[in-house]
Each structure stands twice: as C-alpha cells, then as structure tokens.
Image (cartoon, rainbow, N blue to C red; front, side):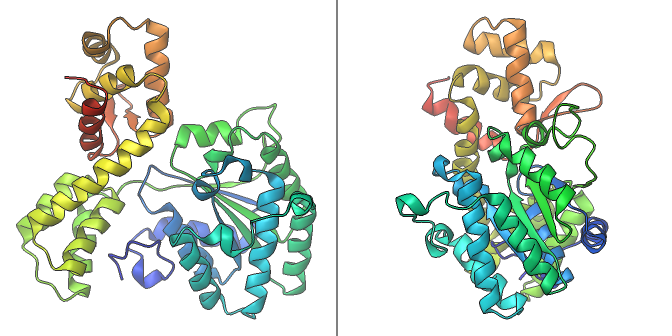
Length: 376
C-alpha cells in the first residue's frame, strides 16, 4: 500500500526514486563496505534501504538507533553486537525466506518491542560478554558459507556521534570483512557527517571507499504523481484541487504526503479533516524533535526559527528579529545556534547564503513551543 505508515519493503509500494534505488543496488552488488544514505527527515531513507535489500535478496540486521537511544546505555558496541547476533539467529530459523524474516523483524520495530523480543534484557555477566568484532567475524563466516552478504543497517546513525569507537569498528570491518556491509542513514545530515568524519584525516574512516546516496524531497510533480497513484490504488476519486492544496502544504515531504493519504484512505475522511490531523500530528512530533536540540537555549532557538518561518532569510535580518524576542545575542553565539539548526536538519542554507525552514509543518511546532515557553 502506497499510503502505509510503515516503512516500505516491497518495490511495488515504493514510489519513484529509481536512480537512488539503482545506485543502492549497484553498491550492494559490488560489495561496498559502507553505504551512506543522506536526507532530511521523512523523505523515505529507511524505505529506500529496505526495498533495496529485499530486491537484492540480502539478509540484513535493522538497527533503529532511535529505539536504542531511548536507553542510552544500550548504545554500546557489545549491546548492539549481541542484537546483531540474535537477529541473524532469527533469520536462520526462516531458512532464507527473506520476506517472512522481514515481516517478523519489522513487526517488532513498529511495535517498539524489538529490544525485548531479541532478548536484550541481559543478566549482569552476560552483557558485554562478546566483542562486537567477533560477532561481525561470525556474521562474515555465516554469509560466506551461504554465498551471500550480511548488511548491518544503522538507521539514524548520528545517535552514535558520542561513541568514537564506532568509527574504529566500521573502518576495521570495511578493511577486513568481505561479506559484511554497513548501510548508514541519517536525518540530521550535519550531525551524521560529524559522526563519520569522512573528510577528517584524523578519522579512521578517512579515505575509506564508500557510496553516498542523497535523497531529496519530492518535486511538485512527484508529489502530485504520488498522491494520484495512491488514491487510484485505493479506488478513490479525489478532487484535483485537494491534491494541489495538499502538495502546496507539504512541500515534497514524503512522510506528510503519505500521512495525508493514509488518513483519507483508511478513515474515509475529507480533505480539511485530513489536513487538520496531519498538522496536529506534525505539531507534536516536530516539537518533540526540536526540543532535543533547543532545551539549553529555548527562547533563542525559537526566536530564530520564528524569524525564518516568517520569511526572513539573511543572517542579519534573522538576528535582528531574534534579538527583539530573546534579547541581545553575541554574534558568535547566534552563529552557533543557526549552524546547529542547519546541522540538525531543521533549517536549510541555500546557495545564496539564505536560510529557510526545511519542513513546512515545522511552523506548527514553533507555535506550540512559543506557547510552552511563553513567547508572545
């Protein structure tokens, strides 16, 4: 179903992205050790990877680091190594029936029970018992025996940015394990770059071969085509004016287009009610994402975001507006705040050195945060 809220894994449920999918499949076919998928939030990075891996019929271990980061102590090499080994055991039970394996794994990802399901409730001495490198060596042997590859998907890998050992293990695996590949995705593009440090000569990943895939928001034409196809699939006749209005509101963010279609198809509701539901969900979700970043300087961050949402584009005009709300902000501090918003993917810096909000529904979250922090 094109409007399913779950990540896609069947090509027939995946719209467009032919070039990106072809590049991913080629990288998997030649055995690249590191594949990096960049893109802002909710543009379909995880779906692209799942579809690519199922098309290639390659067993993979999906590590959704947002789930692990809910309990920071789980973001260790030993814990995730244990998890990788357990998932491969699950795959073994399905005797290579990749579709059944994916169904089972994704079911537990979506229900947030995957950590409990694969036995991550360790007894004291069992935790950390095996090195992650030994788990990867075992996975490499497992794949060689079956004449395949194993892919470790680190979804939202920027969550590992404060654990430098991850760069060492990735570099070691790329150099030594012929049958193991890592696919790394990230929505906080600047933070992901900081984690991988691919351009830093001091980083163990510097100079390592990799393939980088950039996933952009849908164009207007792609957005219209996506909604039309989804409604046709559901045998629904939707007014063109309503499709056009939805496309203008969501500015190519695939997640919001999908959610709009989902509400209309699943609940049979009208355009205005579906738009209202999407906006309400976006307000809660984006506000939660923003608060992870802004909590140490909320008034300044919110003032900057408010300025950009109102259409102010240049460094100086944004700063002038923000200071009117939050008081004097030293230039270097303001620059850091603005850079962080770009790094974490909430704001884009254009080639003309102008700034704009990445996701149009961020404006709803800004209004919510203004109320929370008493900003008039």
